[in-house]
Image (tube, helix red, strand yellow):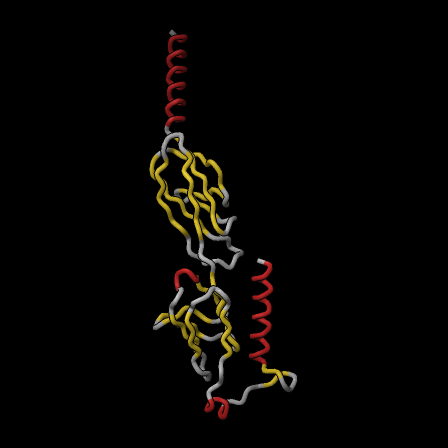
Length: 198
């Protein structure tokens, strides 16, 4: 009797294992840039590239995040994938290259129509905003307007308003270099070096 039960359990387990094997598939995930974080059904599974990761068949949510130490747009990419038995489904996530927008002096506001993006220096995704009109504004300075037609860095040299020059003379550092301009140049230099070695 015991032997019969053991045999039945063995057959049941064997069929269960075979059934499970038939109900699994694989997913391979790459990204641009590489080394991006990946979550599958809200569970962190690693960084790209990920090759032949086994999943149960059915619908799964794939979330891909750009590298935290990069200059890429911080948006995540969300995909719904249907995994089929014994098939390797490929997914390639692409994050658009950002554009550096800076100004001298820094700390100016970047606008597109009525939307404020933040304060310079900052990065904006080129693919999303290509061809749009922007303006950079800072108190005491004339507005700087430009069209985002290239992914090259934008550096706006802001011009002071005449009334601001008369009422608020600029402070000097070492007698001839503006403190604000000095900080802007050091900030721009640091960002340029960081971008070069990223």
